[in-house]
Image (cartoon, rainbow, N blue to C red; front, side, top):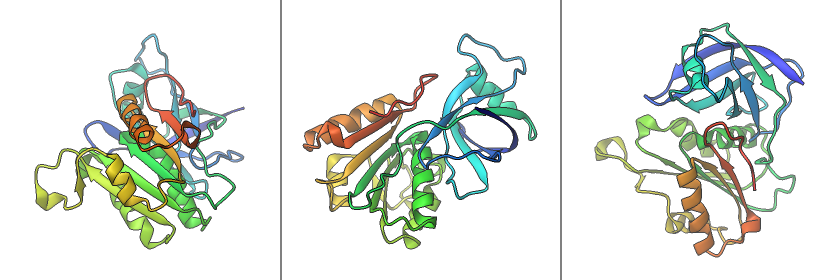
Length: 244
């Protein structure tokens, strides 16, 4: 089943990343952490990959609107999104994906996010906080600079509302210490161990660009985390995210 909705607004968060607010159609139900295929109207941009892409839903099911976060590029799909005016018609397919909260709240969860890979985790953390699900979550979020890191302030504040949520953020390109006093450098195994007391028994979710997910897979393997306790969602081109 598909849904036709309208674009409410678009906001360029950084030079490369934009946030799109879209109507949530009646009957559209999804689990926090899922994605859906999004089709945009033809406006003149064309390429062989078409005007349809999988995008993770960054909003919680409890929020009134749907949020989509995407990295801009020269593809026809991204160029169309970047120039769509409010009111433009968008087609949404049924939500998909298994990068979602487990029914069991006893297993601690550790989320490893890079770039726009924060989208499903913002959805999950917002829902877990507002619905008081009781899941123990540690979010590890790697960005370049605070200005280039979507939702960073919200995700740092969220643990004040949810005692079961911990947020660990590191920046890789901080040039002015006055703008960032937190962790710096790429996300490492030592950071994971220090940030998550239950790291040895946690279920791990990874979402981000291929280079980041590959690095995190290797990090978790070196930490002795079994592959069965690792779910991965890639944010790479047209290919739909494939949890493993």
